[in-house]
Length: 378
Image 1: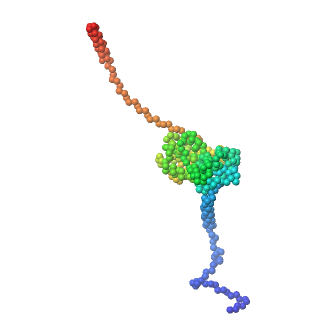
Image 2 (image 1 turned 30 degrees about the vertical axis):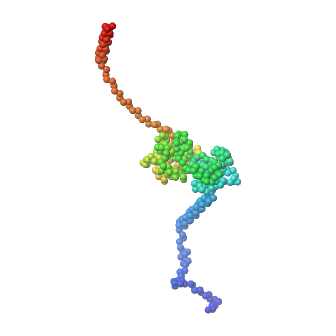
Image 3 (image 1 turned 180 degrees about the vertical axis):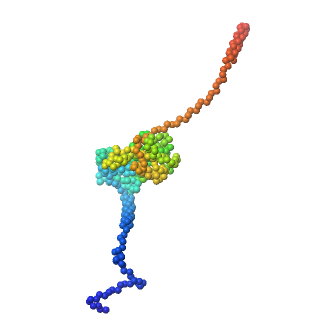
C-alpha cells in the first residue's frame, strides 16, 4: 500500500500471545513515587561494607597463611616497641641490620604455621633507641654470638634463639610454640612477688590453699589467657597472707560460692588518675597503683575473660580502686598446738611423826640389846 509523503504509517504494537493488552508504564506515577527510605539505603550500604570487610579479612588470613608476614618495626616508634616488649602478646623478632639481610627460611616457615598465634617482626637491633640511646642488643643483653632472633611473650624478657632452632624450620616452630604459651607463676615469696607481680604494669593474683591449682580451673584459665596475655601469679594462702588496704578489701564481692577448687582472684595494676587522664602529655610518673577483686564467679568463662581484660589495661569502669600502699606478702604464723597439761601426780600420804618416833626408839633399844649380847659372848 502506498502512502503519501505527508502521511506516516502507524506501526501496530505487538500484543502478547495470550491476547491480553500490554500495560504501558505510567510515567507520571513513576515521577510522583516517593523516594527510597534513606535509613534502609544506609543499612544496605553498611551490610555491603561489612560483607566486603569480612571477605577482605578472610583473604588476608589466607594470604598470611600462605606467605607469612613480618611487621617492620621502627626503633623510634616507642609506643609500638612498648607493645612488643611489654604487652604480653607473643612476638618473634628478627634483628635486621639492613634490608639486604634476608629473613631465614626457618622463621619464614614458622610465620606461616603460627600466623594466628604469634606476631612476627623485623627491626634494626643495632640502631640506638630514641628513648635511651641504647641499642636493643644492649638494652636486653642480646648475644652477638647467637642467632639474631628472639621471642618475647607473657611479659618475660626476650628469649634468644639457639642455632639448632634457628636453622631447622620444624624445630623453630616447635620451640616458638612451646615457649610462647601462657603460664601461671608460682612458688611465691615476698621478693618473687614484687618481681613477678607488683613491679609490673598489671598482675592477677590467685589466692589458693595450695601451690597447685585445680586441674579444671587451670585449663579454663590458660585457655582464657591465650587471648588476654596478662601476668598471673599463684599465692599459697596457707603459707602467705597478702596485705591489702581497706579500700581494696571492700571490693571483694559477698555471697560467691567458696570451694577449694576455685581460688580468689585479685587484680593489681597501674593507671593514670581520671583527673590527670585529660592532660596533653601523660608520663609513667602520673600513674598510681590500683586494685580490686573479680566481679562474678572466677570459674565462669565470661566473668573470667572480662576480669583478665580489665586487669591487663586497668580502666575506670570495673571498680578498681586506688591503693595507698602496694600489696606485700607476709608469712603466716603457725598456730602452735596447746601443750598438754601435766597429768596430776599422786601425792605421798602424810607422814605420821609419832609412829616414826616410836620406830626410832625401838630401833635404838634393839641395837643396845644386840651390843650387850655380843659383849657377854666375848
